[in-house]
Length: 325
Image (tube, rainbow, N blue to C red; front, side):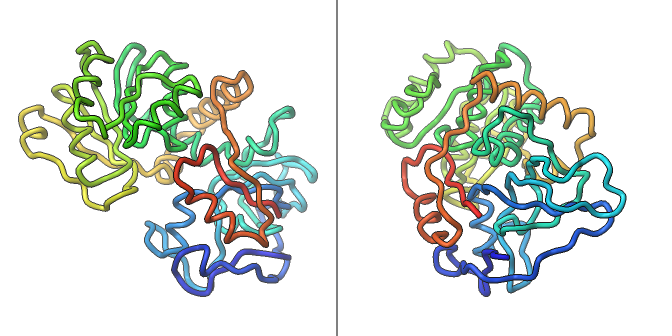
């Protein structure tokens, strides 16, 4: 079978290569999936660079999320069937024609949900909806996030609106405001404007902002923290620009703020099955009724992985880049 492998850590467009690998065989409690489509996520690229929380041994497989079809069943698997379409968001090595996965962690894909949406169902949408749960916000509350035009940022705005939670979005350039407005996402402020803080206050009409999500790092972390009300919570979700959060101690002390981290993979592992099932059911409903949109920026054959990575890194990209196997 074909699989994308890297022999060294580095930029994915430089180190990934399509290689022949033995066909994997499912063990007890496992299934083999024939992969249809797999998205390229930032955490996939960070893993290939060797800078993520998980660092595989070399030579290493790649990719973590996909939609596929059950191709073979391991001993003891009774809840899935050969030919059934499945989504997986935690199967390392998903950038391959076939992959073995634990049956217990797989999500059956409902009929009518396109492959392009099913391929993205788990990692980003589930992170976004889990983040809303993690924040423990209620209908009518205000939250703020930077990187509002990123994949999770767009989803968080859409899911928040569906739940009645107001989401103030921060983007770094004015063009980003119009891009989001074109997708029906309002309450967005561009921080390249001198009066952006006044604009943010006008949008919220002075209502307290109870929580903030920082996906950027650096001084952007402090910008989010400074907008929070007393006893607000700042959540570190990513570090797109800097691994260091620059925040003012006065904003933490005098507003009695809480700063905590959110790692979707760990949160998903510790979530009880009932809550997990409810959240996935909500995601499927929101995607099906158009409340939550999962745009696709392009689909590339696995042989063109370097071009796919470059497309992923294109500024202003809207939607995920998918690999076809």
